[in-house]
Image 1 (cartoon, one colour):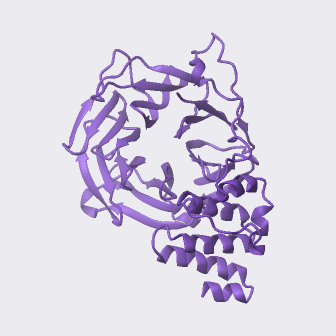
Image 2 (image 1 turned 90 degrees about the vertical axis):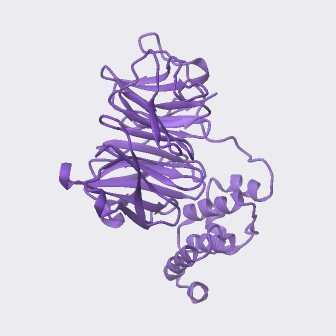
Image 3 (image 1 turned 60 degrees about the horizontal axis):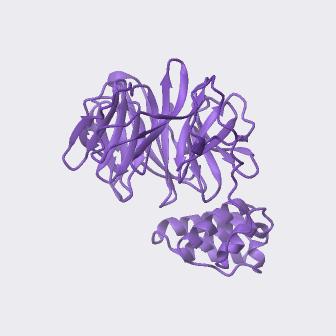
Length: 385
């Protein structure tokens, strides 16, 4: 049906049917992905087509589109030379888009390590946004920014710096409050948690969206026997299992690949949990009002991370190479910090302050960089070593 729509020139029907074909086909079917990219290009969505083609190349396939008229709009994009080089198996003609490093902050603020000096920043225009989370998609070179006040997700393009609505509550079926989201870069999915109600009447939903388009793919809830649920954080492990942190209990729930109902994993002795990070498929870290907790999923056991410092106030967490990174609220300021852990994962070295902000901020780990919102409309990059 998709190819029939294409042959008669009905580009919108071609696009919708190609999406449906991809959803019904095998995961990572590159032939269907190229079909969708073709439909995206001819229907006026060349940016989406570029992202889809990048994912095809990541899977080891290089479609011949250099002279295909259906992809003329893609070839007109500023980012086309990079993709063209990847299709030919050559180095990209330009370096990755990151601003040059700036000097370390002055002594009036907590000093960052020289190896992690923040970039001058990516400025954008989005007045009135109340950010609650940030994520970065390296393939599309876009940021996903959560706006709590408007119950929506925005896209900030890293190259053009344009800001567009990605998805809102009405189209995605979000509940009253958006509380967290994370990207599964391996599978091209965005996992979002939303909540409604308070105390005994609270409920939450885990939403799966197609990262490239924002299309809703799945909604999952805890079983009715779980009682009131309020998810405040979400994390994905390498095998695709999604974990959500519930403030009631508090408890950890998970959604296994292919499942449609959240299952209770275990209760965690935490007071006021705020953030969640996955170290691997068997280890999670939870932040609460008293500090950090290491959770051993195999043993269904939890232990406090020990240190001489106060580890309370973390509003986000991420794991990288034996360290935890995140945003910590300390005495009215917001710090981007790194905590190196011992091999057991239960004892932390003195924290390293990478950056500081007097205003509330959100951040995200992406590869070898940590990005954070240093002001209402500036995203800065911290290179990590």
